Length: 123
Length: 237
Length: 241
Image (cartoon, rainbow over all chains, first blue to last red):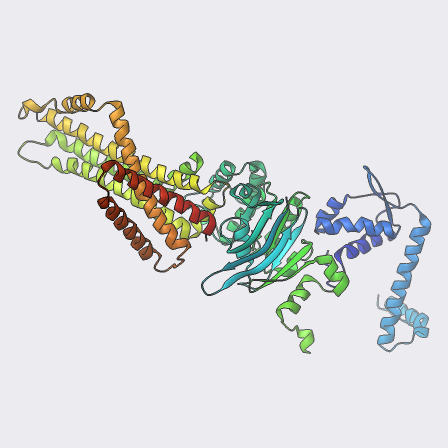
């Protein structure tokens, strides 16, 4: 994984794991790798990796059973909450960028329609 | 095993190689030792491994003063060619095995194999990249508590560099401290957890890497540029 | 310490190989020439003489090589592997000195005994001209066995060891001093040499003041020990690879 330079690496990996949970690549209740295995698979420092699950637990995304391992939460309300946060983030980024190029957010439905149609025509 | 340097000074006739440097190397951490040529990185490593003496200051290992016995727990991979002319790779293994109780032959030959080297190769015929890999294999096959790697990525192709970093990560554990000095600052970003910046023999900064990102929003590379004063293209524009 | 001796030995293998090769060559030449030699042509004496000569030269070469290795280990990267091991410095020094002594004794005595055996062969071959001497080798051996008991031999070897120890300690100390305290890389060799001369002159001077032979000997040995300890101290505290 290529890391951005101004955000702590453990947060970037947390975000990546969260995305994989929310997109369904990792399922609720799945066992997550040990923090050492995380370090090796993301190729990051083990101490850095150790902070990941602490953060994920703080966000309610996972829980640890001592001696057994770390698991993805099965609490659907928590996952829904995060899904909603992600949606807000995506929409905010989308609308900000549109605005910065001079488009009006009220036009969004029309723009989508227009450019989706155009795509069908060229195919 | 924790190794602490307090006020280490080393002077040569015309130059102060280290000036009152105080640092502590704790097990379980991987350190990046950074700075331009001449900042004292190699000298520090040589002093820690007992190859060079200090003029002032103390080195303590788990609280007791450093003696020759501690060399059994400290492994150093210098930049230079250090092996005896007649040696083949298997002779290097024999040498390390003879002198260091913690040397793991199986691990060494495994790494040699992964680096596409063979035990019968003569050391003096190796390219600089192959030599670098050999030094890594020998040093990391020792179960030493403090590993000092001086520019281990020099002269090595990209894929091998990544391989070496992966090897370092897989051999890192909570009982050893690993110190890597390198000019390849970007490549070390994710591997290390602490960055040590030196300049002209002085310790400029020793910082946890994630803290640097959290508090200052800077990666090691950016902090490096800030400390050593290069303006980036973005700033210029 | 034995491990260090083993690796010092390995570092010298080319010198040893050349010595053995030279010995083998001279021996073969000698044996080939032997059947064709006569009392008129003394060519046969040439390889014989060379064997003894080579034995002497080898002795000095081994000593010089030992000194050169020690110096090189302190100046260049070849010393890293040696000094990074958890071996006490005095053990490293002892190993180096011991190996030089043992290898020089073994090679030189080896050459000389072979030379003596060859001389005996020559006497046998020329028996009809030198009939009174064809028991030279047995006579030499009998003489040696009669007059030199094992204790005597051991004593001689020990005295030799002390001489080599003293000499090497002084040289090592000079080199060590020049390399560590007087860190002058360029004239290092010259400075070592001057220090060595200074110590030797001092040694002679003081010896002359002492009248008793025993005390002089003790002084010699004491100076050697001082140099050994001094070298150890310098390397432990001031090493600079």
